Length: 413
Image (cartoon, rainbow, N blue to C red; front, side):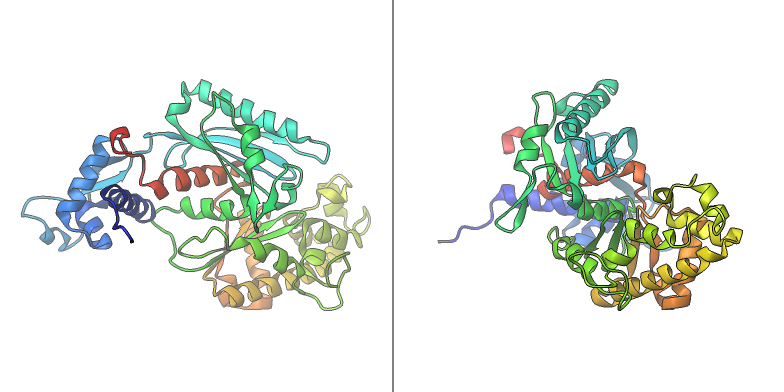
């Protein structure tokens, strides 16, 4: 016999809806919150007042006057805005990538309070990575006079290329982070949460846009030695990214193009990964043929970035221009296919190393080869390379705050 939903479950669901609506919409009044959630004003008042008393929410002042909106309230009264209390608790995050380990501490609003990073090479051991994350997190907590009770959790995102090194394996078709969680779980630390960094970076990018979150599919492209793709749908399905990275790298963007073992000729991996783009420019790279680019990178081809290629073209390195044109043709094919395949309204670029000027050139090339419609959908990620740890922070906020309706009083649990 099926049992009905308990009062505790209903309360948790209502609180979860309130928290997520406030996060996605930005500060909002009780009246507007009731309308959005289709809950009575009396219920919203009761729920929000309890959450204010517990410290989860805070009243931040009156809403600005907008025409006739005040007609919904008794004469002379103004709407009071509610927001998540930024200092209710604090959040630790980390991301493990092939080039750098980043760790940081932030507020509930993802305002950064502290951060640290460590270079990562092929010789950096798992033990060294774990020790750095633990010691950096402990130091940040100590510097801010925080105990584990003041911190919601430590969220850790792992890039796919690092999954094997960190002893993360597939179990029943999903990633099993249990061994990594055990390695990071020490008595003085808060609860540890782990996930695939590709999806978490796309989630963090969205969470940083409070009140301006598009209700449409977004494709998130992370550029590195691998090219990883996450498709973030409005419902933010955690499992969506898994097959997209692998299949996207096998897509062909230049028939008969460059070869790479295990991939079709002219595949995304063979044409557009960072090593692939450096190998393409290496065909013309020299002190005589590309003087600007050679000088800017001190003669090291592995230092070449897409941004520097654009600068070299502007500076008159003619041999670079043809290669850059071909690279951008391939990027345009990929972007066009991503938009069409996933009905994406936005394509977010992460770890591309582009300045605003470089991004302007990227969009200009895309416009030339793929059209205005595709070019206008491209944006740079709100998460910079030095703040990747915000991906881990987003995981904690989602798993240990929004999806459980905040924290209920002990006597109710």
